[in-house]
Amino acid sequence: MEFSQLQSTTAICPSLFNATTAQDGILSRIRLPAGLITSTQCEVLVQVVNQFGNGEIQITNRANLQIRTSRALPEEVLLDFQDYGLASSAESTDGLRNMMASPSAGIDTHAKINIIPLVKAWNFYLLQHPELAILSNKFSICFDGGEAIRVSDRPNDICLVAVEINGEIYFDLHLGLGDRGDSPALVGVLIPHNQVLEVLAALAEVYRQYTQQQLEQKIHLRSRPPRLRDLLHDWGVKKYLELVAEKLGYTLKPSPLAPLPLRERGTRAFEVYEHLGIHAQKQSGLFYIGVVIPLGRLTSRQLQGLAKLAKQYGGGALRLTPWQNLLITDIAEADLEQVTQEILNLGLYISAHHPYAAIAACSGYKGCKSAFTDTQADAKAIASHLEKCIQLDYPINLHVSGCDKSCAQHHVSDIAIVGQASATYKVYVGDGEINFGRELYAEYAADELPQLMERLINIYQNQRQNPDQSFREFVNQCNLQELREVISHA
Image (cartoon, rainbow, N blue to C red; front, side, top):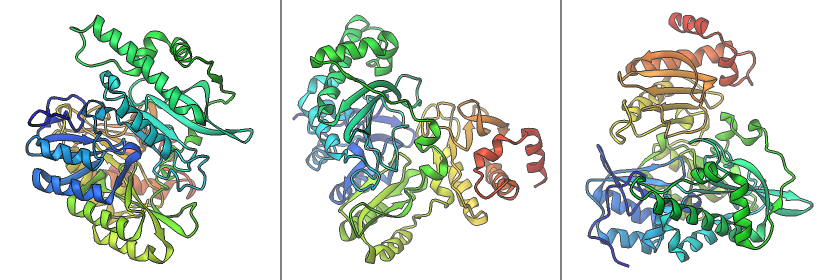
């Protein structure tokens, strides 16, 4: 395969072969199907980051990796990434490797089916079908095998959720119908597990034909390919599925299932972060450890250390999560204490109650032209302060965003801190008429946020109705003016 001398750096949505330039360097995104990365792949990545980058690796909210380098990566590095499976061997389809799965796939006692073979099969299919390269690089597919660690509510274009009906395993089809960040919606189609790949292929091919038509008709008006949701808004779900069935040559099986209530999808903070800490696997005598990665960022030394632990004590791979944490799997019970201590020695944590466990932040103005604030520094200041003065008994999901696009976290948070042009933040809590929640403060200085969070969380822990009342439940019932007064006197 032939490359230009250096990777392109003009992307709107960065990938490995088409990166983008930011204030803090050239940003490359490494797509890892199902968030799996082996110890050997980690070693290769560490060498590149140490040679060309800033010594830091970031886990994204799609369980991929981002690195920042001082210059575009040369051909030999891109070839190495291909050789070690960190990139597709076909450059043209590398950007389509958006495949999400539960980080506990294959090891979760609740799973109805191991979806890892499906992820690998779809990854191979993309390699064999370079014509799909015209699709949007944001095209994303999610496989949910019914694990306790659910991912079906994550934003994806297509989501397949395993269900059991009369002793048989099927996948319920969900499509991303809503706006950016919305969960995929049930569309009433049931797919037998042995037909998943061919149905996915038909879904992608109809989308490809639509994309080609759009690009041909509006070639001078569009700077990038249409999203799948553009097709759905244009044609509607019914027409799309009819064309898919026509492509397949058989009728799609209707689903008898109703959508799960949101609460049952694992969206409450203490459910979402239950993968952190030590957990038994379905394989007898083996355990996994969920590791807290502060703001999803690892130093090369930390990644190298985790990779070494996975190789020495575990299954030889790390599993990244859409919550910007990771798992080390297949650890014998006798080794759990040693591995836990080694993780702590790396400056990392395993407790879901640690302040860093549920704090998310976007890149901020140093890494994104849309951001107004230095979200990474401000989020670190909050977490460092809370670590010294607060003992959490439930995770509190706090999201720091540099603008109202909310790129780092699409789902609703307990506390949302949103940057604005004045370089101050708006502060939202709980549920509200807009996705961020109810506005607690219209303008708050960045250097005063740590103390505000301390007061707010202390008020919650001291005044909640009972120990099981969540932060969101507490603030939802609060009168905000009264809450502001209590905060001001705290």
